[in-house]
Amino acid sequence: MVRVLLALWLVLSGLANADVYQWQDANGKAHFSDRAYPDAQVKKLAIKPGYDFFRVKTVYDGDTVVLEDGRKIRLLGINTPEVQHRDKLADAGGEDAKRWLQNKLQNSRVRLELAAEKTDKYGRTLAHLFTDSKEHINLQLVAAGLAEVSIYPPNLLYVAELVKAEEQAEKARLGIWQQAQYQPIAVASLAAEPHPGWVRVIGKVSNVRSTRKSVYLEFSGGFQARIEQQWLALFPDVNEYIDKTVEVRGWLNKNKGQLSMLIRHPSAIKMR
Image (cartoon, rainbow, N blue to C red; front, side, top):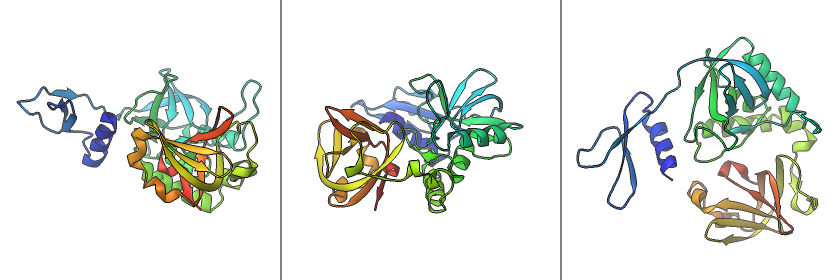
């Protein structure tokens, strides 16, 4: 929650070039401000706006590159289809996204814009990429229909722009949105084993169930979508989904014989 507050503070206040201070009150609650308070135990946060430019050494796939300094960069807010590697065949559109990114970055330098989380569990730097001609690469991949939006809170920079670009690309049936592999699958048609990649599932929500850690949207047919309680405030009232036909987007999991999908952000739920 602290990281969410900090990310929102930076986005809404435009403090890329200002000092940011953090302190805790008597109840242990974190606060942020652009000035230090003398009666509080304040620490100044180091905010790096990221205006250095770098050359890209390798384009690994449509959403991952390696810089000349050796850092592996995972593009924030998006996901592109997998390319062929080892014994796994490429997903539809995977090579198209990689080729587009190679051509775009061939003679360009890029700067990194970081969000609340600096790295992922694989040690990759998480960033939005901008060329020296001010092109937002993450956004352009989505606008061209080469990537889908994939938001992982607390990394919420450029969400509105990404979602709008995806809606337009999907409506125009660009790139992946015309591929059979990315058309919605009815809950009743889900196979017993999880689909291996990103998938769209559509069905009717019959119930909403809450636990201490998660809220579950239960669909007719045994499938369920899970929202973690810590991010529930980002969503509208989940009870509004009951008895509605809903599409959810993400990766399928199987637990105790039941298929489910983790929904991290409301952009992954579409009312139909």
